[in-house]
Image (cartoon, rainbow, N blue to C red; front, side, top):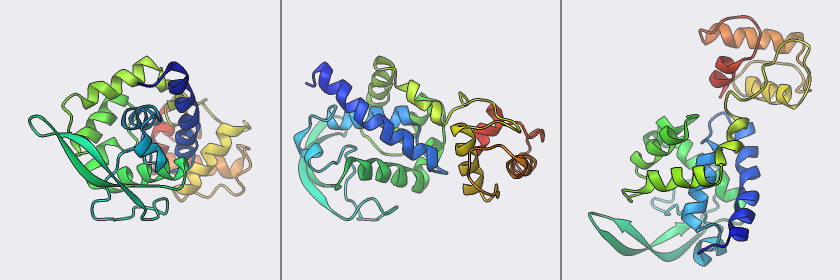
Length: 233
């Protein structure tokens, strides 16, 4: 069982990785859910087999399909338990990575690429997100959703979701800062030109925001509030 210090160190390590990926991706899985699943699957970074291979999420090799560039085809073999009316022990091949960053990136790539997880992509409600992941076939345990939600609640992991939820500041013409930079990145990723990504909400950014709002049936006011932020994610 992981100690309090091991739990804290693991969360402090993986949280910024999940957040940084979500800041730049068009499709993402909620940071709190990503972090909680890593905690659960790797026993807070204490599972020797998984941690030795940076396989924090327990993805099987399966068909060996690559959904991005993070997984290089490496694997490790270990025992695990799965639930088929009762828990049974099996041995299988699981994905291995050179770094934790690659593991988290492949987690995002894989879940955001497979249609069976579509309902979890860009979902801002943790329970809806993990329910969709469980129902998509990620885990066989009948208590998996409650387990993940318990971890999220116990360690207040929703605090890390602000990078993708409506908790961001409302932005309008003339404002500067990192939130504007992120806004410009999201607009650019969706095909709306903002000129330079410079953190300045200028004329080109304003025009891009209005064009995005118009094409997504939002109020065209050039102000980036909760509904526009949500649509951008």
